[in-house]
Image 1 (cartoon, one colour):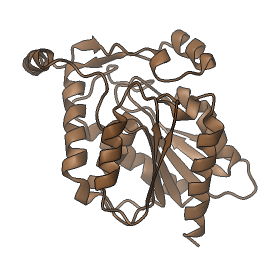
Image 2 (image 1 turned 120 degrees about the vertical axis):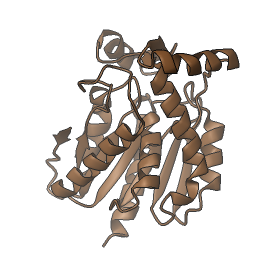
Image 3 (image 1 turned 90 degrees about the horizontal axis):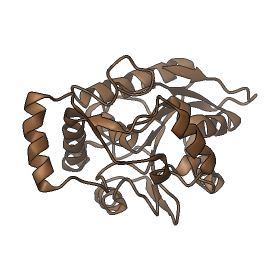
Image 4 (image 1 turned 135 degrees about the vertical axis):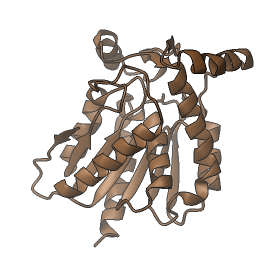
Length: 266
């Protein structure tokens, strides 16, 4: 877990960023700098099996490991500078959803979900699914390729160069990781009633997402019994909204949400 402290005179709070799968904190530099410029400290770590974490890359024993990490980062953020907001991207968005469904005592001022993974675009065939189910019992840590490349997540050519040369960016997942994540997606829908209905929520969805099914994001959002939720879709943008060439328009929506809910905390 790392901290990036704002140098702004008017410190507004702390934001916890939860990254996606195949990912790690180093690919969020643009977003971190934006939050720091806006007066927020940032806390972020690498999820188990990703980046610089000690666990074998691409593998987890249980999705609960992600939930425990998010819980820990939020509590650390409160020690740094409240109020605390949480930004979860892709699988990180799913981890945030599941954390809030299971840990309703967490004190959070607002949540931003960026292209949350509630259903994957590239799903294996039923035959592969059955094979993976059997393989999970024999060799759960076996790594398989997702078939995703850096070009599938962003149109930012500068990020292409960084991603291709970065050994910490991995495109492989374990058989058991896949089964744990798909189960978490089902629970995100089945346990929607446990999501805090008063918690301010902003969902940002890439209009041309190559990784997750945006229709499932919309379905989850529409079903959510929340009194303070908003949805914004960005036409033509790829999965990593915060890295896209048009990211400034995304940042404007994020900042407006943060300012609105900071005023509500006074």
